Image (cartoon, rainbow, N blue to C red; front, side):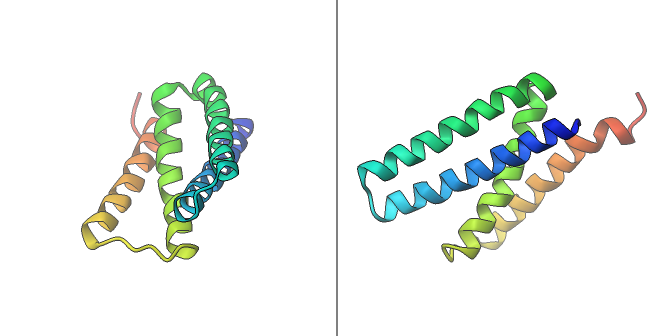
Length: 112
């Protein structure tokens, strides 16, 4: 994973976190400008993802992004909006994070 790719992944995660927070705010208090903000942020995040797909490949890029977003957005949901998950949902989040660790580290820890 190149430093540039890692930086793009970080930026896309940040953009998607902002988009998710904006979407939650829109659901609480709908307005036209909030909807435009949500759509703009998700569009920007997906444009960055296109570059990541080119660099890492579709499967790895979308898996990495999906699970990193899963963890980051849940942190925002728990810390900022006070949301909670039950034991089964929490276990699913942990298993998803473990899965992405295996996908990411697999080429480095298994024989080729």
